[in-house]
Length: 89
Image (tube, rainbow, N blue to C red):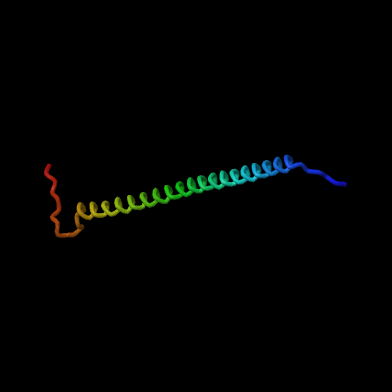
């Protein structure tokens, strides 16, 4: 049995195969771009959480340091050298 394949069929199948390869490659590139965008968004969210936690830590340290300074500046020493307060009626 001899099969004759015309040049038109060969060209048709070459064109279909080339189109399939181009579509497959485009799909692969689209998937890579989608993954890149997803990982970028995930990284940005993680970076925002870390920066928020750092800011809260810095604010806590600032507030605690200034509270200690304020308490130290406005507190009276508890010594016996102070004269007692006399109430006048």
